Each structure stands twice: as structure tokens, then as C-alpha cells.
Length: 121
Image 1: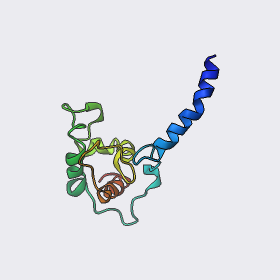
Image 2: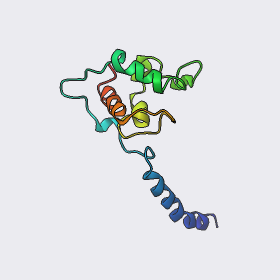
Image 3: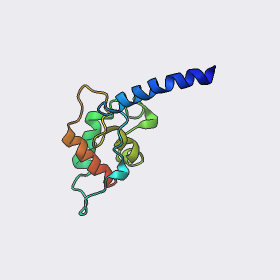
Image 4: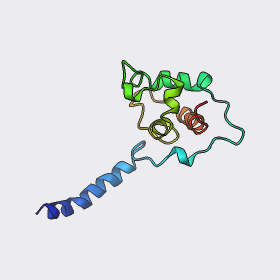
């Protein structure tokens, strides 16, 4: 009986997943491994880009003791330790974070992708 119910729901579940996958930021396939640091490196650094980006869009929730401390992004080292996680949630075409309403522009997300691909120097 359980197997029959599961089989009956599978097409419906598949349809829902297909719809969700078309929504911006949902089930994105944009991955850090798909990006590389530009041949000459990047001019983006933690001081001229990353620190401000993280402060404006991330650390209000991911700021250590007052935020999700296990997912803190309030230092350069914390970002570097979480390059992939930050990338798949906020860089390039990924739009899962931040949860709005003041989201980064696409240009900022592209800069974040470059900075992360270069190791967040």
C-alpha cells in the first residue's frame, strides 16, 4: 500500500520540482567549480569589496554571536572557510540569499562570484 501511494505521488512531486527549478534562485546549478579566477587574478579584495558586501548583505544574520554563529561570515577567514556555501547561495546566478528585500544587484553577485573564485583575497 505504501509503495502504491509513493508511486502515485511521484509524478506530482516531479511536476512541483520542475516548477520550482524554474524560479530564480531555486535549485540553481551555478557552482563555484564552474567559475575560475580571471587569468590575471582579481582586483577585488576583502577590504575593497568583500567586507562591505558581507556587512550589507550577510552579517546581520551570519554575524557570529548575534547571528548564526556556526555559519558566521563576519571575517575574511570565515568567508574563505565557506567559499562554496557562500557561492551557491549568493553569487553569480544564485539568489537564495539574502532573503530580501534589499538584495544585491546582478553586477554585485557577479563580483562576488569573481572574488570567491579567486579565493576571497
